[in-house]
Image: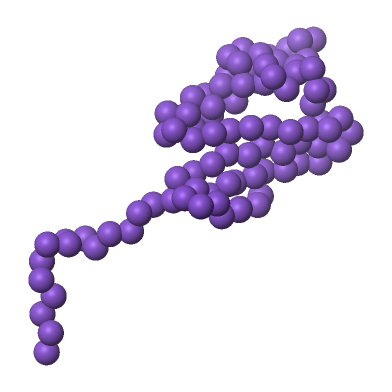
Length: 98
């Protein structure tokens, strides 16, 4: 996992060294029920909902998610998070000085 500070966001990247994903599948990877290996049974593989749910949550927060992958080398999934704006808990209360 890697973190990169952007102007008002943080980019989080998670990388694996698995088998990778064929380039032809990348555009559809975040679709509901999409699975790259249709021969796998649901007992072995997932339902194809996980990445679609993650994309929905990330986009609901007005952020982005992406993937890049190379067959035989692995995949990297990245998403952005908005940095929080720090404010004083009670900005209208005057500060007393000694």
